[in-house]
Image (cartoon, rainbow, N blue to C red; front, side, top):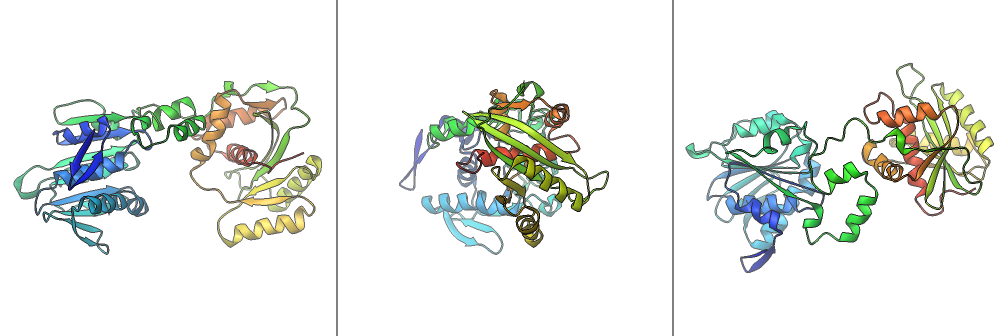
Length: 394
């Protein structure tokens, strides 16, 4: 569907059009990644804004606000010539009809109190706490009239407040659903690549936009066949996740040896210890000697100068003669583990039979809810390095 606005043609897919046509006071647009949620939320607010009324747009954090709702609103509003003035210091945009839109973060819900609003848009609502919704709901009362609320989000399961509010149809609520592929501007080849990195349940949530209860585990132990040996000519890498202390409640230091051949990954060895920094150095040195210098060593690098110094210490003093690199990780632990989980679900990750198999499977099955995740962090890091051309050999 396309609509002409200010001599500009806006392309909408059917789910977006249904959302724009909805007249219920509480409206949700739930969709997969790239389904056009932020775009339709911004456009919807512009279309509904009444002259000289006050509206609110909320993102989970100010960083997300700057990169998401604020940026999209400016681009779309500028294109359609809907914007009269922009106050960047106050994160306020005035539309041509005098309506004002305040852009705020949800990280402190109480700061959203005290406003009388004609409408509110919560973008990425599933990353907000329910208190944000409750605080804003009571503010929809400008000029003696009840205002509206819209929420655009990727689902986070049936236990989340967004499902409780929008998931069941009612007289005052409506939910429009869209999958990632519904947006014709998202390349199908990209979606296929993303799907290959997700487990089937995660793909249902992140790409199909369905409310899926993922449970407490990203991995299932039955996804990991146990074999007697790995191929001798595997391309290998050893990856270490270092613990901060040796306290009984702290994480362990974990080092995994992962190999790959013909698209099949073999967890060949696991070293797992809670020890002093000196003992950890001895463990890493001894392990490297057993692996030989043909196996590159990666160490997860902590932020800041301390992380740089740690890697430099291992390069110069602990493992001279080995290929040693630090790895600065980004994203959440679950995001980093998802590509590995997708390959495991497809049957492409094997464990070489050893005494540590049960402990490794227990942690994998408990992730991300289990108290410790060092084995998963180490294995995810090794997997990520092996998927890059030429980082492992031997």
